[in-house]
Length: 67
Figure 1 (cartoon, helix red, strand yellow):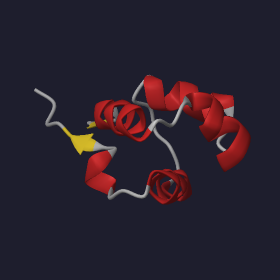
Figure 2 (cartoon, helix red, strand yellow; figure 1 turned 30 degrees about the horizontal axis):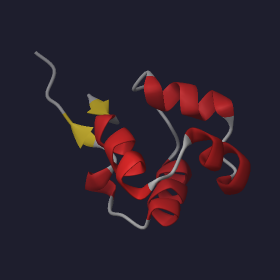
Figure 3 (spheres, one colour; figure 1 turned 60 degrees about the horizontal axis):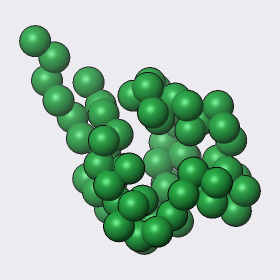
Figure 4 (spheres, one colour; figure 1 turned 90 degrees about the vertical axis):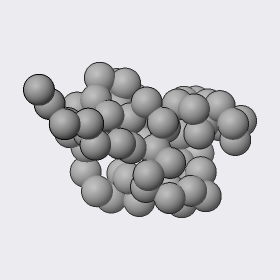
């Protein structure tokens, strides 16, 4: 399972809010909701997040093996 817990930490550390993601980065509120629920998102969204946050994929997402 892919989880986005690190995304919220990285956003906090960089001073980026969900408002900034929606209004300035073109990530819609539905996608923000999906990220919060650890649901599937498109790879282009991951690319946008890494670009906006100037980070690597492992700074925003993590694979956790399901039991």
